[in-house]
Length: 78
Image: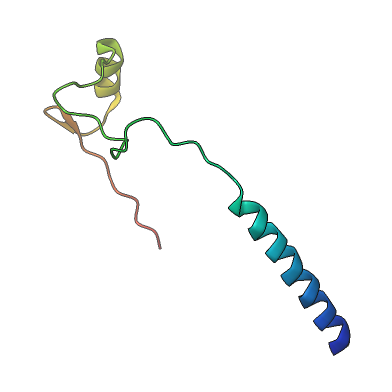
């Protein structure tokens, strides 16, 4: 591809970007309603309900356990 063709493509790309940015300036966004707190965390004072039968089966199948904790090995990647 020769230099003249590259410059023509660059000019077209700049024109497309300029038109796109002008269109974006006219876009009106609605204000977001809702909490702006960080999410994804549960409070420990309100634990999720669990199925006690599932818990008993899980602990029965666990090879290593200590109290309410299951002792699991961590994978070592080589």
